[in-house]
Amino acid sequence: MRKEAGFTLIELLSAMALAAILMTLGASGLRQYWLVRSLDAAGGEVSSELRLLQQRAASESSPVLFGASFRPGTTSWKTFRYSMGANISDAADDTCVALTNGTLSTGVTVLATTAFAASSQVSSGKLSAGCGVLSTDKVTVFFPKGSATSGHLDLQQPSLGRSTAVCVSPLTSRVFKATIEEAASC
Image (cartoon, rainbow, N blue to C red; front, top):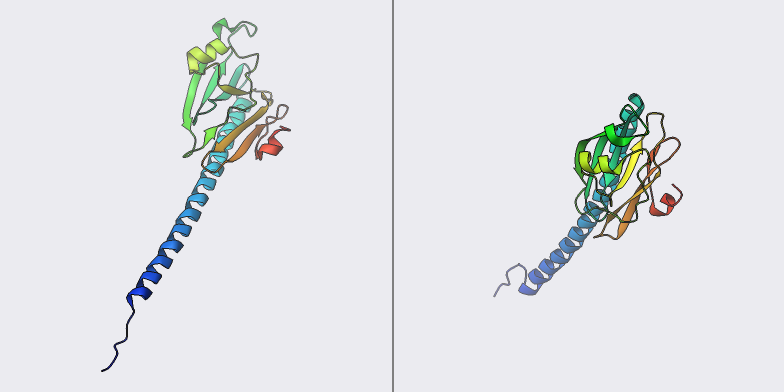
């Protein structure tokens, strides 16, 4: 009797098990790549938006300021335009207008360890009433003369346990991405 060519059941099961293992490893690597890219994209998005605010502040004349607020522990942030009234030392005639409300990339959150602090020239009451900025939000403001409130914003991808930072230099208002270790010197 002649033996027919083909695969045995054990050979087919072995090939299917090997394919399943390779697909699982590939899916895990793809997920890791996607999470890393979302953290990089969030850092780039925030940096780009802060640079845009910096440029808008430089193109306006005093007493118009532009800024951004970040809510620690969430994915939300917003930008605003703050106009100081005729009397710069009195906040009674100041106005704040919300420009954009943003959400960070999938899964990325603002860490509670951000170092931004609101400028003394900006009324927290006007920020709250006009722009919806809470007292717990971290705020950075860009001034027309080219300076800014300094600090760094830490962004985290909790699924990875990785973080990145966006720094703002006080004298030049330079905005740049950095590692968490580098951000300590911002």
